[in-house]
Amino acid sequence: MEDFNASLATLDYIVIGAYLAIIIGIGIWVSRMNKTGEDMFLAGRSLGWAAIGFSLFASNISTSTLIGLTGSAYTGGMSV
Image (cartoon, rainbow, N blue to C red; front, top):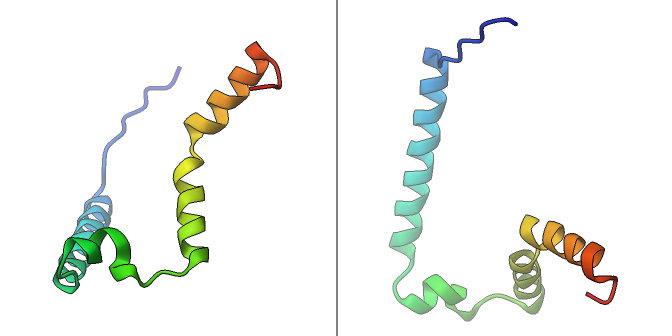
């Protein structure tokens, strides 16, 4: 079996640093735009029904849902 030595190169550290800087920059930019909790949690009540529906759908679909429901259907039948 071949010995595998996993290490990061300089370019890897640069990419990770740039990613973190971008994420922190977006966080600071968004935090300056939000004035109240309503802006943060409800998008200033400016979203349409489609965006809210897709958001709810995406929140309810996850790997635990897909795998868990499949396993429950296998053990308990399709009525689950």
